[in-house]
Length: 238
Image (cartoon, rainbow, N blue to C red; front, top):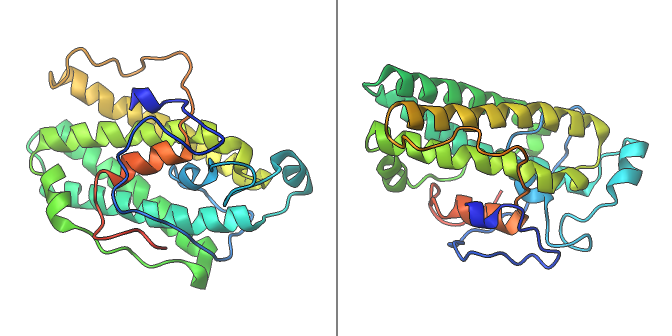
């Protein structure tokens, strides 16, 4: 993960090759007051300003308009939020023996479901449906409480780092404000899960807040990281 931090490449290249059969596109109606999810950044930091999610952010932010970029990001984000919300909901149902890990599953499930609900509300009839989950792969990541919390601690920093790359590509000021409010929560999630790893002795040398500054992650880098988990059955197609 650290190898890809800040690896934004105008041509969309990355340092890893983890992508496994995943492709996402989306259209719909995305309201200016939308509460963006922590994974909205995935679609925003695109290959180039001439690419699928291109934008001249400063001009459109001043105009306060929502363009096709925001529309695509909305449905793309919803698809990814479905994955996170389902993953944590199943984790919560496991009722892990360690009360702190069980509480983490509950808190994360509630937060991610709130993001799903918000996105579905603003997208309305344009909202994509829940992808088909690969339950065997999901269960493998939840087989025990240690595997779960390690996976959660790996997932949470991805959305946080993606925001730095996404910022210039989110166009409407109201959306930018909402995204920033979620970004801070995602950073809390990252520190929260890392702290559990440290203080439970799972990763005793883990530093929950290792950096004074966090680097951005590119679109391709984030997509590869999430796709490598194979939470869904087949390609993601919102």
